Structure formats: C-alpha cells, structure tokens
Amino acid sequence: MSKKYKTEFKVKKEKTMDSKILMLLVAMVGFTIYFIPTIVAAIRNHPNVVAISLLNIFLGWTFLGWVGALIWSATNIASSDNK
Image 1: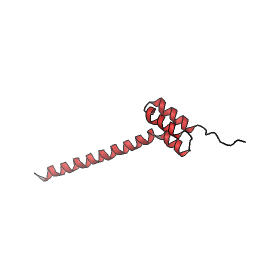
Image 2: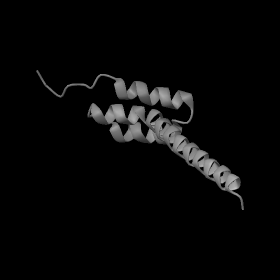
Image 3: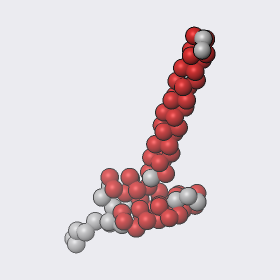
Image 4: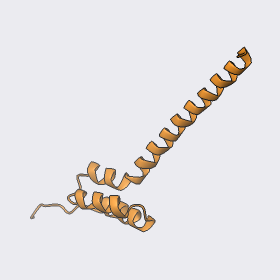
C-alpha cells in the first residue's frame, strides 16, 4: 500500500468525525429549542410545570402544541396573597 492511499484514508476518517460532531451539535440545539417551553416553566417555577412538560413532550412535535406550551409557560403566575 502506498503512502498516498494511507493519507486519503486518514483525511476521509477526519471528515467523518467532523460530521458526527456536527450532527451531535445540531441534535443538541434541536432538543434545546424543542424543550424551551419546559425550560421557561421550570425557571419561572410555574405551578403547572409538569402539565406543561407533558404537553411539550407529547404535542410539541406539532407546531401548535409547541406554541401552546410556550404561551402557557410564559403566562402570568397568579399570586397566592390574599390581600
């Protein structure tokens, strides 16, 4: 086997590794975007965080379900003060 073939194989292997890293990065960004409503609800300590999470998980793949979960997670949380 000549040196030329070894070099070509090494370059091809590096490109494959780069594409795997890129695919992993794209998947991580996609999951983060998908779970934005759940993240917002958890950060805001929304009392319905479990329901928002379930809506996001099961209906988030539809755009309407995702937007509904996002709006719900951003709604005003009623104060428990009885004044």
